[in-house]
Length: 316
Image (cartoon, rainbow, N blue to C red; front, side):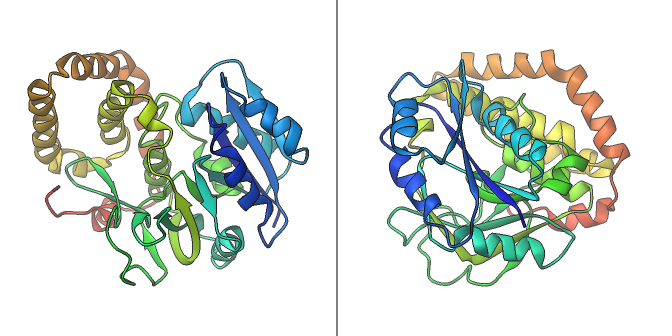
């Protein structure tokens, strides 16, 4: 299987070396592609001087996670890759990380996405083992911040996968499309997982594949900008993907969560961020609904199946 690993980078000069060294040390051969999102630091110089085998794509400005990885994915598709992995610049891979994901993808032609056990850099607490998607409309990484006591040591199917350290079938991507750049950052990986589920693909978690993530090393630089995109994408994700009667069944739960977010924004004096996000959704609504029509029209699984994949406990 021909693979490529795409690393989106924005001002990550202090992160890149450890990340790229771990990818170059993988036990199977792969091509590494760094997409630089208009960095203003020494990222490009570091790659050009120290990593001559890494293929560097330089963008003139920051296109977000979704825009950046899409450039890398398009490069992989154009160069006949069978699968493309995405890997955060603030993460480090175990040497068997990619091999285990490839084995997972090859184990069943219905698997479109393979994801790993993503731990914090302390290697004892979880960052993600795949994602839940709540009926409240909120995606939550499984196990986030909990101590690893072996509770996620079995391979299993999950709703979606972290875009920070997962492998995607190019066959699947050609059929369902690549990342939605309207998301810019946050929940775009859940969106592609949701679309994969609707089209009949499986998302598989392999605990033998491990990577270690310095949580929020990039997003911590963005402040309220990150809150804006997370709020905006909360609405887009539900409107675009929740199928058929499930849209109406869980709309009251979704509305309650939206109301809580609104009140929280008021209390924390972030009201303008909430309004800006909601206004952007209204502006984008015609294109979101057009995509919803296309996605739901091509859905191959039942709403009952999707309902079985949704997480129904109350958000904490």
